[in-house]
Image (cartoon, rainbow, N blue to C red):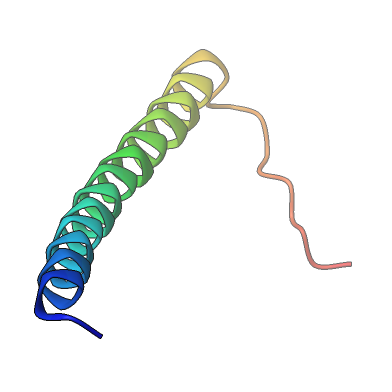
Length: 59
């Protein structure tokens, strides 16, 4: 393997690692948004019908 090829591959590796980290950060943000949406929907349902009994999932 030539030095040029090695340098090129190391550069590509660095770029890919950066993209992976950026993608992880983006996915973490999407998960946080999903939790906010689920929480908001849950709170909204409780405000609309607070007298309804909760459904138990233990069958």
